[in-house]
Amino acid sequence: MKNLKSLLLLAVIPFVVSCSSGDKKAASAEEATKETAVDKVEKEFNYPIPTSFEVTKMLQDAQAGFVLGITNDAENADQYVTAYSKAVNLGVYGADLSYASTYNRQQETMDFLNASRKLIQSLNISSGFSMEMARRVENNLQNKDSLINIITEAFYDTYTFLNRSSQERTSLLVLAGSVVEGLYISSNLVISSGYDQKLLDVIGGQKSQVSKLVDLLGEFSDDENVQKVLPALQGIKEAYSKVGDKLTAEQFDDLQVAIESIRTQIVTP
Image 1 (cartoon, one colour):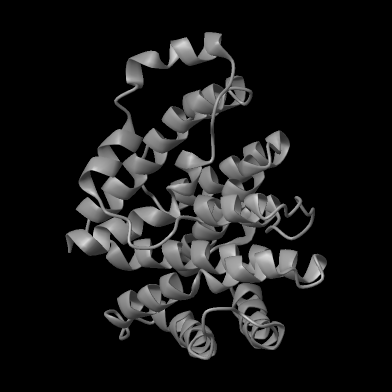
Image 2 (cartoon, helix red, strand yellow; image 1 turned 120 degrees about the horizontal axis):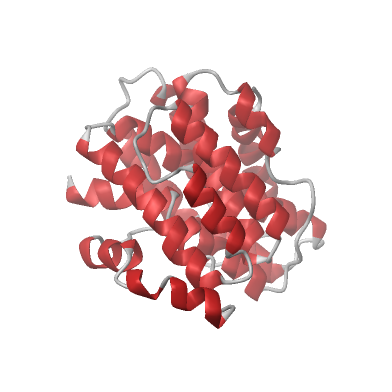
């Protein structure tokens, strides 16, 4: 179960690590919390699959630019009414937040934070999200070190709540949404780049995380909400099974169709 819980944290860790250095004055205000949730989480859990931040960082390292319009509209958060749609789209917004903050898109960062807060509150998850937390984030948008502390604390509280209240299925749905959105962002950047091999490699590198996610969801295959995503993810896993050391353009096309399909199903209100 500890290994499962470590995976459940992955959907929100992108909010944690997508930050680096910033204004020293604001950083000193957060210095008292240096032994933050990041440190606690890293000590307690081993991460068997990449976080959304790591995926978007790989995209940035491959010199992919930020593309407007491929993320989920933050305003859609108000239209998700079922527990399933709220959970999977919390994961989607986690990946979107990672993408926006990696590229220093401050307005989008705030928009996705607010969308995530709405879904967390709507799911009745007791966590660190509050007006005070939002204010701290807004005041530290120029200071990425401080953002690490603030956002990590909030999402660590969220996952502590889910795990302690035995809501593993909800956590896995959040994780599924995050993985799918990471794949979707990556695939769109591959297309916009004209099938750049560096970006194809980023997609190819997500093969193992899809396989592990499918295996975890399979433990709850009798769950109605899990069944809404599991078959499509199994299809993506099957497409990945044909991929060797390098993802080819033809193999990518097969993957992209499957990714587009499940992503559309997830984000459509």
